[in-house]
Amino acid sequence: MENGTITNAHAGWVIPITFLAAFILTLLPMPDWSIWLRPAWVLMVLIYWAMMAPHQVNMGAAWVIGVFLDVLNGTLLGEHALAMTIVVYGVVKMHSRLRMWPLMQQGLSIFMFVLLYQFVLFCVQSFLGQPPSSWIYWSSSVTSMLLWPWVFSIIRNCRRRFTVV
Image (cartoon, rainbow, N blue to C red):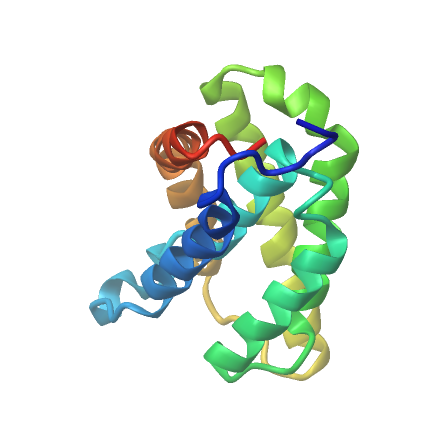
């Protein structure tokens, strides 16, 4: 068990499968009234893995995942990549502290990280002349915070089951 290695033969698939699940949840259709409430699924999974396995999921991984999300959403290439890279930088710098916090305190940090992510996207979209027109734009940070304990628990159980270090 060396510095951030995966110890189970099937454990190498756990991280990609959790990201695949997050991408699927992101692409699921929602009613028009609830679009702005969609949690930042991919970002939450990215934060989890950057917090628990910073040697495997780091800023480079955040950039690649962000570009993939840009392609899936049809947004400006690099928009989500930039925002995710900035967030993951903060998570990796604080990962040892974040891991020790109780879930409720982690939830508050998730709120702040998702807010930072949305702020970067807001700045890019405003620069392009397409700023969000409603305060509801910021509501996904609240839903992400509220769902964090469940997301954390589900991924942690997978990580422990397959002994991903």
